[in-house]
Image (cartoon, rainbow, N blue to C red; front, side, top):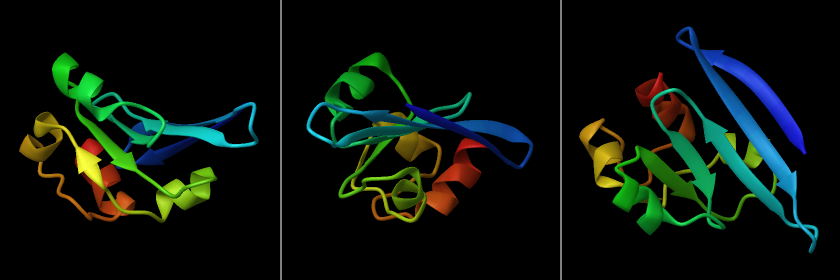
Length: 96
């Protein structure tokens, strides 16, 4: 497991990478407002919980997540101004 911490606009973000048994990675970036997750996690569950959540796919590392774009998101993420295909660097601004 790897955890990296970084700040955007004085907001602490934690990027988490967990090794899975098939040499894949479970990836997530969290903030106090919401989170970005890889496709292994379920957007429908995040929607039901009322979370501000987004999904990225085709990522293998934390850097891949940071250089990707949103492919799915919850309605509360949309209310925050996050949109489909938005670059993660813009999403981090919205979550800060």
